[in-house]
Length: 364
Image (tube, rainbow, N blue to C red; front, side, top):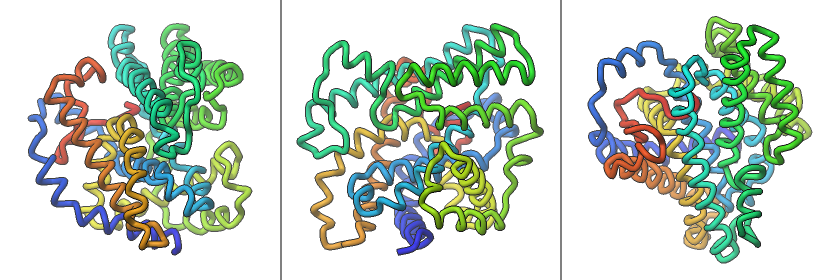
């Protein structure tokens, strides 16, 4: 099945649950304050849309059955989906703050990272092999835990690890050292490049996209001025995808693919049905909840693979597992809010963003 056909089936499956999401989660939000409405006017809604698409791709290709069934498609998607996420996060990163509010904001990434990475490690250690997880942890003691958490995170939590380090260096360079313009950017790039040689999972091929996002923010009029919606982006994108050697996000081809995917998706934003746009924006606003909770529920879907053995394409399994994982993540976020857990773990009263709300998820 071609890539567009797979995407169409995924979206169709999600739309079948569209009203279910609205009824179940939509009314359970909070009443936005005047400050919230003021922030909405400045918001780039298209970025929520992009985050929604990329977070669905992240979850889909962490399903082991899909990884095995579509290895080349997985490599193609891995070329751009988290790269684009880091690019957007670099653009949205806000370091123009005093130390206290800045570190409170950074704790919104660090606390859930340490907590959920630790939980994920324990899960892989105790049930990873039993659940036939893609990765397993053979030894878990204080030394190995510290190595995983500080240097080599497992699962998608590497994203929070990379983003936290990037934002911290960004803040120290621009606000504490008070360097300006290209000197600051160059110094930040050198520091992150050096750290990538010391910290195992802090890969330069990932960091460069965070830096691109920062550069775009510091040196342009806006995200949409640089990444313009374009249907024509599809042509060079298809040409690049014809050659598997381009499936490397650390290469120039990988950078081009990421940029072209962003431009083409921004074009689709204005063409696809409004209901699909709203759903994807809703998921994008809840991207932090989906990042932190999805690995736990993704591993739990492995037992369902046998139920869908009748479908050799694994599309039925993917749609069902994707809807299940996303729903569980959103419910978990809502429960954290209701039990007032969010204020301690995520440094925010509200982790869950209701369907009608327009607060940011991650990277802002």
